[in-house]
Each structure stands twice: as C-alpha cells, then as structure tokens.
Image (cartoon, rainbow, N blue to C red; front, side, top):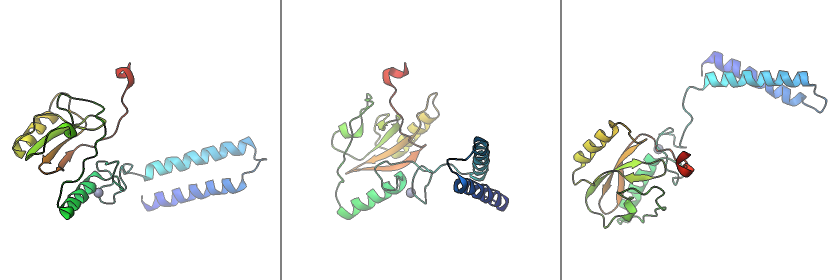
Length: 189
Ligand SMILES: [Zn+2]
C-alpha cells in the first residue's frame, strides 16, 4: 500500500466510524444510502490497496504455500520439515493415521500398500487426497521424469508430488496447490 492509498483508506474508514457513532433508530434512509456509498468507496480503496493473494496458511514463511489441514499453521512445507525432525528425534517410524480413501483408484492410496521399501512414489492431488498415480519407482529421477510428463499431459491434475518411501513416508517435493474440493454428488448431474 503506498502513502496516497494509506491516506485515502484511513479517511474512508474514519468516515465509516463516524457513521457508526451517529447511527440511531431515527437515522433516515437517505443517510443509510450515504453510508452504503461510503462503505462501497472504502471497499474499493481496500481492493486497490491489497495486491497479494489471500494467505492459504498461517505460516509467515509460506503464506500462500500448499495446505496441510492437520498442521497448526496449516503449512504443508513446514509440517513436512517438522515431521522429519520428529522422526529423527524418536528414531522410529511415525504412525500413519489415514482417512478412508474417498476416490479409490487402481493404484489405491499409500495406506493400503504393503511394507515400505526404498521407493519413490508419484502421487497426484485428486481434489480430496493425495493418491498414487503411477508405478512406484526404484529411482527418484525416473519418478520425476514420469511426473514431468504427467504435468505436460492433456489433462494434468491440480498438483503432483513425489514421496520417498523407506521406513516412513516423507514428502520430498510438491508441485501446485492441493485445495480440498467437495465431491460432486451424482457426478455433477
Ligand atoms: Zn511454512
């Protein structure tokens, strides 16, 4: 926000405050219309002043980064870092609490899979959860190339990520922003 915007917005908001002070049961409609116009003017000024996107997380470092609903600051990137730190601290695999899979695929979700091994799992965000979108690879580079090809495909998913599967799962990298969307009943009909 520049200085001129700050001045104009401050003035508009103070006018609204005065309207609030003066409001009573006897306030005539003409006055209310005036309030409406002033409110609209203040909103327009705000609209012009705010240039950044609405933050998706409460993280100061990644305000518009990918969201992890279970994280206290909603930040997937920081939560991933914290998980890795916790795992290092306890030196053992973290328990995997997984919700039911709302969108079964022929690959299933990670929780359904057998004992972890050293593999790289390509996953896509299906609007509800991360799901495996290809064969787990023994080679990270191969998995990344596979995802790069998927992203260039005709109907790419909202987001992709690569998960390193060893004694535990760890998100290595996320592309795109996984936003939770509602399941359309009856396929949107
Ligand atoms: Zn963060």
